Length: 268
Image 1: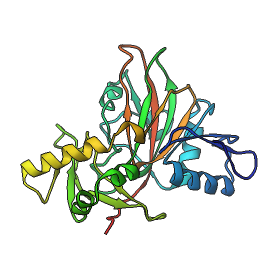
Image 2: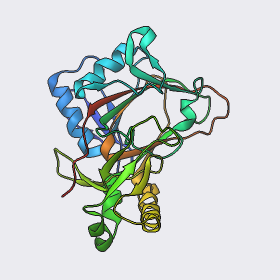
Image 3: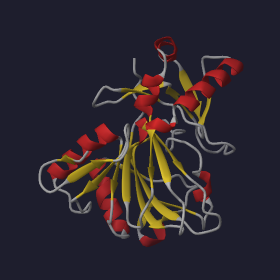
Image 4: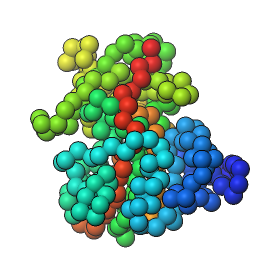
């Protein structure tokens, strides 16, 4: 199905629960109406892709700053500071960070105020492979039976990077609410969620196993076969992603900007 919106913009859904491709926009020259259209589409599809946007980091920054305060990346990530773009982190094989993203995660969930939006800009691709997957966390919550879902309200989990003791950790609700739409979603991920704080170690391990499994069920996902110059944005509190490492020693490099630091809103 193809959805037409005002002007020449076309939004094409890519999967049953998540993801759409946007055509007819250059992301460094958006009107206020364009930004509203993108926000509405983002809240509906959770992750949006903009093909053929070129490689200029100024284009990346111009797009990202339309969606809130830009967050500077943690010092453990390489960035484009030497080119005047300290806010753009470089995730690539040349610095080893590309391999660390090969697990399901929500960006910087270990912060007290994780970025609401993440914006990627593909720079270098292997000849084959290097796709990224995203998973819808509204659908994950809805898939749980009512008794299990009800038991999650009021529980929190600790999110941390291991083994990096110098990086802060944060506690977030297991179920969160979208501040604009009111929709509820699961907030758990494989890479950063360490334990459920109100439960014993054994209970926490068992429940997290279930939640991490349901959060990445295949039918809730979309998979992107990148093209150089693509830009993607997603609603980071409500989407997990996984950068698939299946390309051996071939180079892969992508730029990321984090936008709008906010504490996840408890569902209740």
